[in-house]
Image: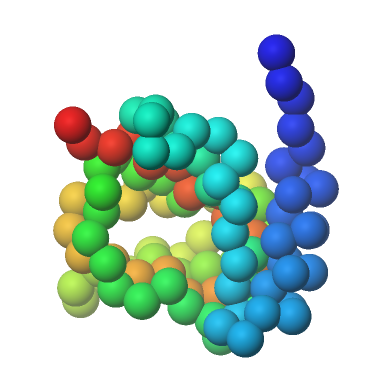
Length: 110
């Protein structure tokens, strides 16, 4: 069994994002290509975004720190620390409204 601190990973990814040229960084903490479930901590500085992309499967965004906006088409949802957003099965983007860290959980479609 392995235990990790999401709070520590969130702080670490946000610190890394502050030094990254694109304003965001990510670290997959569980899963990967060989697993159905994948969990990734993403750090984003205020104003950074993950450009519009397809949903690779069932997914949620849990805001660990800060505040983000998930947009899909003409719809958008804002969430802050402690909130979780269910990612729509459609193209979407994520923008950091302030320095933020999120836990992206994806169950990849077969």
